[in-house]
Image (tube, rainbow, N blue to C red):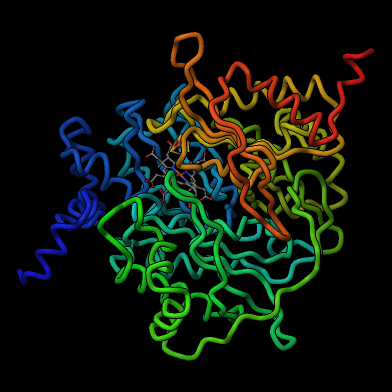
Length: 517
Ligand code: SRM
Ligand code: SF4
């Protein structure tokens, strides 16, 4: 080893050393063996880290019951695929459930390691994969949840998202070219003007824009949240046509990140840190070199003003006579029976397709006008409403302490209980987006919410109790901006009172007529 190389190795962080010893993806050939020896006999670095390269997450909170993070490109899956996921969680009885994630994805819970080879065979049979969904890989790629069915859409993102995923994962087989990035990486492709994917919080975001009359994408780079720093993505000053150039540009950016990104301090390894180090112009020219041809400069920003939509409720599609219906799934939590029911509803009334949103909800597309009224009488719609109350409607929550060992607070149950109570106590002119996140990692994206709540520990009456830091001012869609922390350390048992005051003072809430009467 040369001096330079040994210097480089000396500065590698713990995770880089683990990856240097054995690429995380190599684990995919050892799964049968692990299933036989059991998780207790596995080497720690394989158990706690490398399994994440195939989407299998060891949960210290529930040892032996693993989480399986899928890849669901553009958040679209067939009834058949959803049914297979339902069968997997059903097998685990009370331990089995699933969460729709803030990346339009699904995570399964309760999974046993000994079942993984069988589960992977079943996923393979329905063309699903969980490969490279954790650790230093590209996460689920998000796209417009109403791609191909929205009358106002600009670009149908479905095929592009799939192609980018196929390039990165080698069609779901796993791809060593991108299995050792310096850090996690997020890609989003927006197809409308309402920024349904929160473009600006992704490492690469494609945002529709006209250049010389042609529709394509402006490209933003470097958006991310971390405990140390949160940044909105910045313009790369690039416009690409909505074709394979999107795939090639992702490849080029990933290669520059892979080869030049910092592997020393893990808190400073996301793409934005590299952009800072190089400057955006140098970064752009390195990407262009890797891209192999000239990149067009960005198009003028499109000035059409659209409000962010949540897609809950009934909407006519661009296809005459067809509708999509958005169902509210409280904090994204699904049980096996819910998944079977959703799959069945989509088959009976729609086109056997189910879609997910980054707000952790579900859309069933392609319901004919004639079937709509009967569909609306289905019992599942009592649980997954098309008309939730204003606070429940826009509630988002990360996993929290029920399953996540980083969590400083319980999130999902608490978020629901408080939203339901405030919905009962207040009349709101419109829904207010409240996002809960259990720790500063910000998986629940409190910085994009009207009101964000980030878990923390607080001293109250001489005791350490669960609390939150309060974020406000997050704006999505046009003129998106990140919210900032406005109040620190609110004990959880005081959150209700604090939110009530804010909702009345800032969001036009009034004490409920029913309560007054
Ligand atoms: Fe996240 C780590 C859950 C979206 C930032 N995230 C984790 C882990 C894997 C930590 C762990 O091992 O326990 C959590 C798994 C808990 C569990 O059992 O579910 C976890 N993150 C989630 C999910 C499930 C939250 C949710 O309830 O929806 C989301 C899964 C998305 C997916 O399908 O892939 C999720 N995480 C996000 C987002 C939001 C987004 O992508 O829009 C962010 C902020 C955006 C970003 O990454 O820039 C996010 N997660 C993090 C971070 C901080 C990253 C950093 O650069 O420091 C960590 C910790 C880390 O990577 O070191 C983390
Ligand atoms: Fe876990 Fe923290 Fe992410 Fe919530 S924000 S899922 S508590 S890592």
